[in-house]
Length: 76
Image (cartoon, rainbow, N blue to C red; front, top):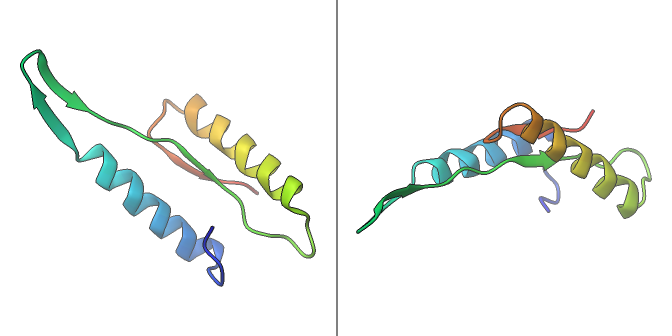
């Protein structure tokens, strides 16, 4: 939740989070571990209920995963 944040600013924040996570590398005795994250986000439209926002964000998440993972997708 990013109250008082528009879609453009939220996209920038989500991309920063995605990049920070993908930059993490942990060396173990069995090799290096790296991480990725897919993010789906949605902006409140008019007087939309939380269920509608969650549904659109979830759909955006699945689109991010379909793109090959490690993407940020904003619901339209």
